Length: 72
Image 1 (cartoon, one colour):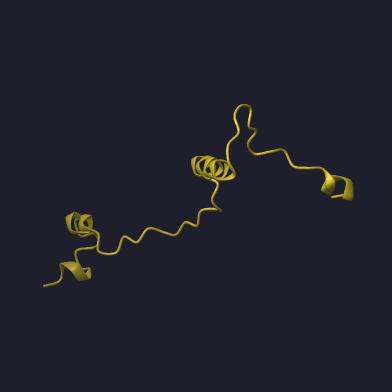
Image 2 (image 1 turned 90 degrees about the vertical axis):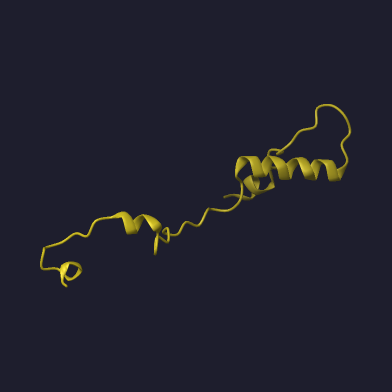
């Protein structure tokens, strides 16, 4: 990036076309638009914790007839 690129102003996020909003009103609008856009950081996803899920009780045992769940 050259110094000429760094000196150019960024495109405005919001442009007021009509009216005279206060700084607080503009700040509230920007926050709402950012939230609607999903402009947080990158979402951190982790694997779902399925330990002890109720659906596990409904599953049938699998494996060979000599496997551990079938022993008496």
